[in-house]
Length: 196
Image (cartoon, rainbow, N blue to C red; front, side):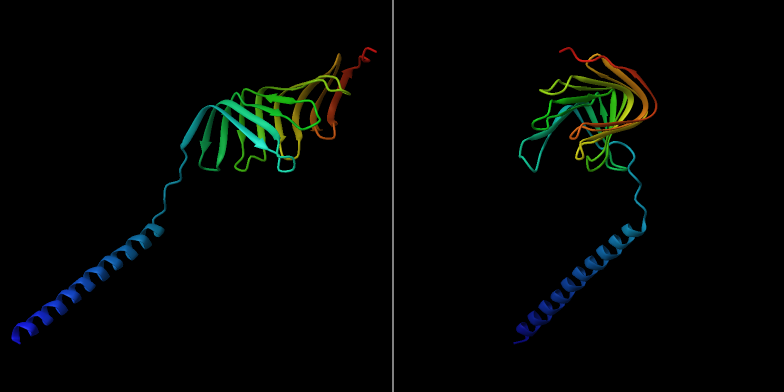
């Protein structure tokens, strides 16, 4: 009988010690996690990943076909603002029923949701001839591309060649879907009528 009483007391003491140990561990974790929230974490400024010779295809939600193709020599992710730095970016717009348009530059920056692409240095845009349009070339030092809107714009000088005609100006807005083009200032050019 005494042996059973001793066992019961031993089990009760062990259960209390186990509960005390678990409670202490829980309290330690709560204090540690609370302290982590109070200690400022260092801001990441170094790139956290990169890709070389990458290729990305955007599918149109409306048609289920390729909307545009994006490739480059190197892409580096910037965790500070979730942007991407691109070396030798190439974007090819493949809108259905329209001639393909290719944009490229020496470097580019893409924002976090891919809605804005900035191309810099030696920027070129080439649109192939279509059934009712002549080939078009554009040269500039900077272009802002809004892929979802099919719009390209810039505030710097541009040179546009359509067939044999040339147009120069500073500041441009162009909509590839509607084929609208606006130049803001210093506009001049030469017009060569298309051959019959």
